Image 1 (cartoon, rainbow, N blue to C red):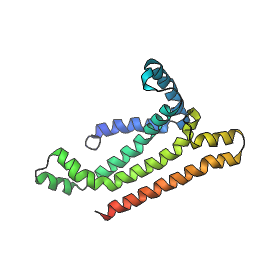
Image 2 (cartoon, rainbow, N blue to C red):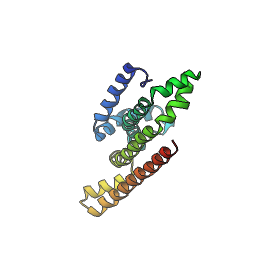
Image 3 (cartoon, helix red, strand yellow):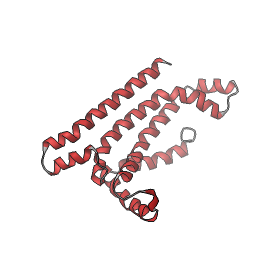
Image 4 (cartoon, rainbow, N blue to C red):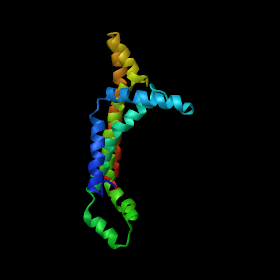
Length: 180
């Protein structure tokens, strides 16, 4: 919808840019109270104010801007001639989207997904501050105790994972580009 209507695009990016400008620790903190309230009033969900739920929600919120930008950039780079040709062949709007625009936008979309995935790997470590655990818990324990070995034990696997995710997406994008 944002690719087709500039007003929707403007409003969407205003909200997503606002979310992205919040420091990660502040966003984690802002999510604690509403999720604690939700967990208290709907106990069957298994949600609490600290732990995995606010961490996953914050990572999802931070992922929205790069994913939306990548998707929009991919759709906007589709040649108008390809869309016109599809329309001339009698394709409807949904057919054009699924059979012409999305396949042509795929490499740019995957690049946005690559950026998002690498960003999420790094931000997940900070989620340990609200009880989400993981390598971040080890890193922060090391920071609090001035134990460089624990800091490295928490940081090195995350750096390696981020590099691996980046390389994996580069391989996928290269494979998609070869098939075009």
